[in-house]
Length: 341
Image (cartoon, rainbow, N blue to C red; front, side, top):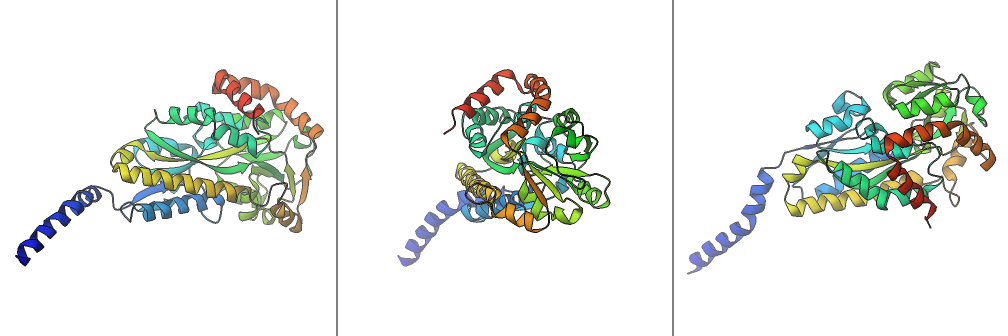
């Protein structure tokens, strides 16, 4: 009798365990997660945290390895989204800027001076604009799950303080591989030079380029003051939200339970990453800016009137790119920003 009970108990246990085990058996031993930056940059921290939370929430059924430096596409940031669609990459925490050549609507976030503050970013990503963009991405072989943040991109250079558009004339500024960025800096009289971040750092060190534009968290983590970047202008001309996505085929191979676990992990990692990206650069906490000044960097905070001069100089670029992004989407974005709390 005892042996029969034991057998029945064993069969019941197998019935509970085997379905999950069968599902897990179909999973890859390792999933590849692509990011442009690794730790200690907030971007890399977000990716690493996502992988950690997924392993925890799926009880180890899904194991993710992060590949920073867009190493899965030989460092070419603008090819990441295509590789993700093709299945070369399984998951990514990607930049709206880097994916904009393939998804033109993502150029919205790079329209010069569209977003005046962090609440404006939130009004877009957490409102109808964010939903429209996620719906669009979902038609392109990926499943978008959550928003993260790289941050407002500020301007630095090795030559002089920049307080007016005229100050940028002739300066060789490294920019990402986006035609919109080339248009923006050309309109300001600069000499924009497109290159990957991996190539940018030695170029700054040798003086092959004079300056760059990036969030302050990158400015400090990459130790740009040691690469001749002694002049910093806080102008908040564009921001770069990040998007947590999974290749659609990979997503469909997971159980519903694991899909929801991966989504929950992305939402949590995204929220934590946004908080980290904004740490030390707000009105209530400007500790990061103070740290930068302490490294001998001249920091210029543009006044409202000074910023208007840059807005005026780049307005033709804004108007031109509205047609690419989509007038209806830009109008919705402007309305969401105007209604922000």
